[in-house]
Each structure stands twice: as structure tokens, then as C-alpha cells.
Image (cartoon, rainbow, N blue to C red; front, side):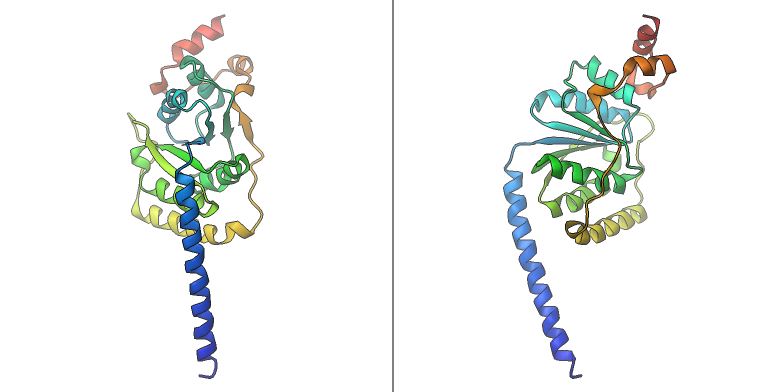
Length: 224
């Protein structure tokens, strides 16, 4: 019993500090939301998302674009080329294997870019899990997240289950608690889109998702 009061007092102190931290973070996120959109973050899973962001990028000429574990490199290159969209500020992150990995690896990149306000590009079938995770991973680093939904046809790129949502959100919350004080994970496979060697890919041969309708374009390039 003699330790009861000190422990209770300590708990109250930690709770008070946590509430102060939440208040400060909320105010910083409010300010971040007032910034213009500085980056577009695309979650891999459907080539429709890359088709969508290639067109969307024209409305955000100053924004950087980060595509996490997306379609094959030459497919994304051809999508941007067909759309006459700039590739100058487009990067491909190739380390992520799942939705948690999308944010685990892209958050340090976005922090290094110094962005405060991003637009998340995904599909309706990837919600609400991806948005909740984005706001946890990025929010704790004072980056505000808006959502933009790419229309998806055919087989969904993601299928949502509540158990999966609960598990991913739980580990995201756990990571959010320690990520500000541990070394940031670094992806060693971040590729500028403009550096993709299309000619080498054409010699090797590759295929893209059918709904991108790139087959004829690829064939014509291979015949040149």
C-alpha cells in the first residue's frame, strides 16, 4: 500500500504529459493542414492508382510523388509518358511488402523531403484501414493527410477484413509510440522514375496489368 500513492501520482504525471503532447501535436497538425499539398503518396495494389496519379499530378505541378510498392517500373514510366505527365519529381519506393510497410518505409522519405501536407492515393477497397494507418504513422510526425480515391475496376487491389484492420492499426499505434525516438528505417531501393531504363526493359520483355491498356504501346516500342 505504501507504493500506491506514488504510483498513482506517477501515473497522473504521465497522463498529464501525454495529454499535453496530444494538444501540441493537434495544433501542429492543424497548422500543417493549412499548407498546400506538397506530396502525393500512392499505395501500390492496383495500376489504376498510378493511372490516376499521373493525371492528378498535373493539378499539383510543385508536389513530389512517391509510389510505394507499385506496378513494375516500366509500366509506371509508360503511364506517365502516355499522360504527358512530368517524371521529374516522381520516386518509386520498392521495399514495402504490405500496407504497414508502405508507411513504415515512406514516412522517413516524406520527413526527409520536409513536407507537412500530403494527399494519399488509394482505392475504396483499401479503406478505412489505409487512411487510419496513414494518419497514425504520418500524424505522429506532424504530417497532415488528405485522401483521394482512385476508381478501381476488375479484381480489387485490396480486400479488407476487420481482423486485418485491427491488427494493422494496433501495430501502427505501437510503432507510432516509439518511432519518434528510434532511428528511422531506411529503404535502400528508392528509384527516381526518370532513371528507369525503358530500353533495357523492352529488351528483357515485361507485361503490365491488362486494365492499363499498355500492350499495344509496348509492342510498338519493341518493334521500333
